[in-house]
Every structure is written in structure tokens, then in C-alpha cells.
Amino acid sequence: MNIGIVAGGPLLALADLSIYKDKVDLWIGADLGANYLLNYNIDIDIAIGDFDSVSDQIKNRIKHNSNIYKEYPSEKNETDLELAIVTALTYNPTSIMLFGVTAGRLDHELANIQLLYRLLEQNIEAVIMDYKNEVSLYKPGRYNISARKEELISFLAFSSEVQGLSLEGFYYPLHNEKINWGGSTRCISNFLIEQEGTFLFESGILIVIKSTEEDKLS
Image 1 (cartoon, one colour):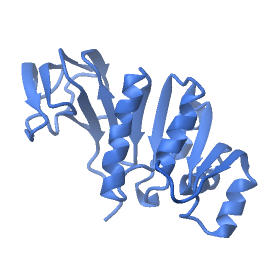
Image 2 (spheres, helix red, strand yellow):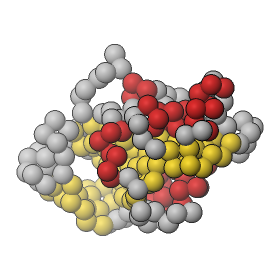
Image 3 (cartoon, one colour):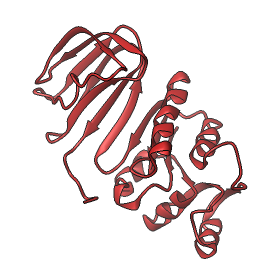
């Protein structure tokens, strides 16, 4: 099962949800994210959160247009997104796409990237998507990667270090290198010179980010 979760990040940074309608089996709206789903004419399978980011009118709209509606108090231990992820896990998904989780509060954005690790540990394919970025975490292994012509691809260490990183099919190739969490920019803004590239590494946890130069927030 492929699950899409939409949180209430800034609307201008939201990816075009209509592109993913046929790729998602179950949609979860977290707080204001449920209203984003309605605005894209996407049925809400589950709406969840404290809904402190919406007016009473919008909350009623969400409530009456959701198959399942779960409202929580605003004082709680989890963010609305974490509640949505916990709910998604009960459906044993193979993949989860996260929308509306970037470009807002920095503390939330960093915490949301950390939530990817929780999904990685359960062997669930997970990606954070906005209008110009895709963010994923990887365990050691060999992976094929493709990208649109205008996309840049960056590699960062999520763990203290990543050992044995090699890049093939990229403009800037790499062979058996170590990158550290401590702040190297060596693997930023690479791009493919073939239709498909390969990255592989031996140990650590790797962040892979696809980005475009588009800037509709300015």
C-alpha cells in the first residue's frame, strides 16, 4: 500500500498533489493538510490532528468530508505529522510520501526529516516532497537513481559518517569516499550525465536530495 500524508506547511511550497492522485492508495490529512486535500478534490481517507491551524468553519468542512476523523487536544506529546505517521503504520504500507512538511518552521522541518529515519528503520520507502525538493534516507547498499534534466542531486551524511560512497553516471563522480555529518559540501549540487545513475555506500545513513532551482516563494 502506498500512503500519502499531507501536513499543513506553507501552501506556496506544496507539491502539486494532483500529480500523485493515481500513485496513492490512502490519503491522510494532518491538520491544515486535510484542507489542502479537499482543495485538490482528493478524498480524505483519514483526517487527524488538533486542528488548531484552521477555523471552525474549515474544521467542520474537513470533518464532514473525511472517511475517518480523529481530533486530538493541542497539548500532546506528538506533532500532528507524527500522529499521521503512527496511523499510517497501522496499514502496513510499502511506501509513504510526505507533503506539506517543509518550508515552514525550521524546528518542525528538521524533526520531519528525522521522522524519515523511523520509517527507514521499518524498511518503508519514504520521501518528503515539496514543489522543488525530494528528500529520502538510505541504508547501505547500491541504488539506481534517475532525475529530470533540471534536477540537481545532493548527498549528505545523516549519521556521523558515511563510508565508501561512490557515484556513477554523475558529472562529478566519486569513488569509495567518506563523508561526515560535520559539514562537508563536497557532494552538493551534482547532476546526472546519463539517463540513470548509481550511488552506493558501505556504512552509515545517507540523505539524498533532488532539487530544482525554481523559486515560487520569492
